[in-house]
Length: 384
Image (tube, rainbow, N blue to C red; front, top):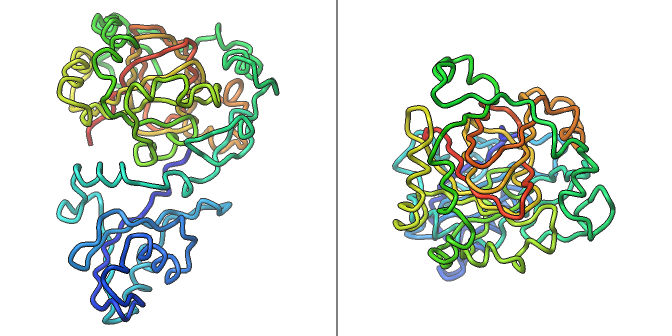
């Protein structure tokens, strides 16, 4: 999924409630204010979301790009501010630069609180290509009706379905393996293509991430979850909070839509101190310098996060095997991307084994298929 078109963040200062059509302070609930903003800006209601509680006449809100447009564009932030500021003495609206303005940004605790309280997590998301290329609406409650399984057989296993799209699923691998002590690791050109780093001993410490180990020690810990479609476009924001035991329960999303079941995709920094300490041996073992952001990833057999790109990343696989499909940024120019991304439209394919670390270059599109009943690992991104 192209990440070029991002939501825009604004601050609204309400000066006169009655001028905005609110007759008393209690009427300025978040849903009422969202409805007012959508109507005033002539936007569909699912494109506007209040992200902070209304306090002292101020609130922050997000405007999402038009997911239904055939050619989505960035939000015209100047037009939004100008339209609301035209209400003269009733309110003022300013654009918040989330990159440069620490003063206006939402603190981590507030962001987590708002994330937990979200009622609607996916209606703003644009249609996303299913494994077979049909455009579908991302949802945390997928049904078999929205899945275009290649077999047309609701009882086919995820691997059986994917084998019909990619007959080489369990065999083909053209990604180079380089030992962590190999001098090529220190050469810039090595990092321009996907490659697998081998020989990292901590990555083979699988007992720490075994399903039973995590459930015995951290079953009530809150984690972020999603699936192939919901996590592809700014997945942290759209994720669904669950306890670890519920996230891993077969009755909690894995069996309803087996090809594209639930995935745990949770930033390590948000986990409890004892859970972070449990994961520290893996985080410390990643090669390369610089600060990194780590994300815990747990999944069942079937698809991981769908077709997407981001900054250069590494993924350490500790339990299970994954099939990776990768291609340079230009692959998106040749639409439709699916289902051919699993065959001719991906230049690199990798069957990642436990104990291996895969490097994905910056802005390379990739998609993952989990080959075993349970997989576990950590993603590392530059902390920028």
